[in-house]
Image 1 (spheres, helix red, strand yellow):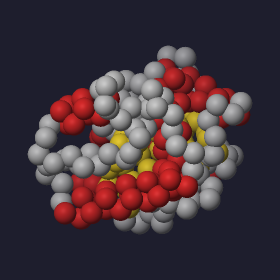
Image 2 (tube, rainbow, N blue to C red):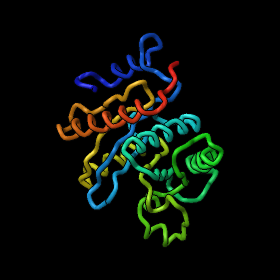
Image 3 (cartoon, rainbow, N blue to C red):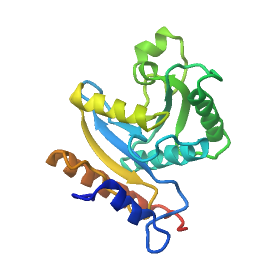
Length: 215
């Protein structure tokens, strides 16, 4: 768990080639959010590590989040690749990436979940909004994982849920040999305890599964 260190100091040690905790998987951050009025927990990724991820990096970001959801015992993981719209528009690169990620899931390059995208935030989490826009999908309106286009979008989404909607959030970095609890120095005790609980659940799930290969 990060204490009073700056994030760069901790993560620099994690990714160091000699003695670090790297694996073949890209590191990414997940917020696990308990949002008032929303029945199920939401996983928001990536809002803290990858600034402008490439398509290849997004593949790992998605897979990390899926693995985390399974460690909670979520049987059907529904991943929404979120953008500003629900149609593919070549002028909006995140919509093209979303379509590519869904095709990667079809071809077995991403496993363990149902993916759909691009989806706007409203029709990703609200069945009524999805129905109005006539989106027929096993994910639309019922997503439990939200994959954002970049760090700026993810950070603003997570903080909006925390400060405007009163959500409780836990934060964890995945893709290393052990889960890393990356909280802010200003976070509450509840956030730190919740992050510990998430890390513990994930570690238990990882021990029961095949470990990630080292690099």
